[in-house]
Picture 1 (cartoon, rainbow, N blue to C red):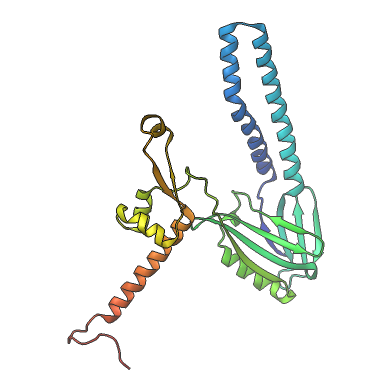
Picture 2: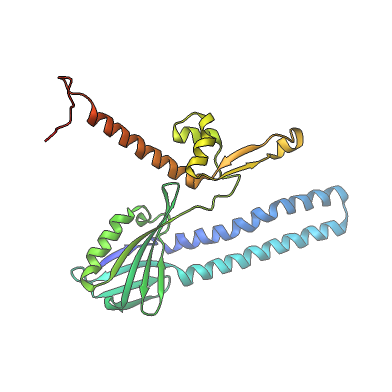
Length: 276
């Protein structure tokens, strides 16, 4: 039974290690799979002992890569993972306990200089959240696992709660957002039809509106068109700025609806607004 408020970032050490081990195993296997398959086909067709030797060598290198990456992932997880942070006692937290994978450390709340709640956003949707503790001697990054309930907590609410708990100790708590803007083009950029649906305008108006609103466009020729129709090009648009424009248009339309309803005539034919 704890006598403090605990922020749980990693509910299960075993589950987190299993996730890291699985990721380190899958990545090299996926990368090497086409090479191994090609080498296997070549060895079967040719029947050459030299080709079979190359296949065995490639398989051995893949196994070594999996082992090295797994060991590296385990080391990183064990050395950097923060399982929970506890503020003790509940009434007036005077201590902060940071529990890592194998050990925990305790410091005075007075040594905690600043706490930052960082929320990563992409197209208005949260991708992840992280709590960063700035102390006198180090910076501790605490990122909840996907399975942790803390990963779904509202960032503003978490910031407010931390401010309430750490305010008496004069610890500043901040909320920051990091918006993803480096979308890979053209694969992640949006087509005119997508933009038209998002902006609720005809497709024919997208080009002009994008130019007026400062949405970057990227014309390119798809591979299929480059072979069969060299003159065919497609224009796609930056999703980050396009999403911001969609929010601007939504606010402008809401403001116009509000203005129209305010200026609507009353039952007697006069202005429905109160002149007082």
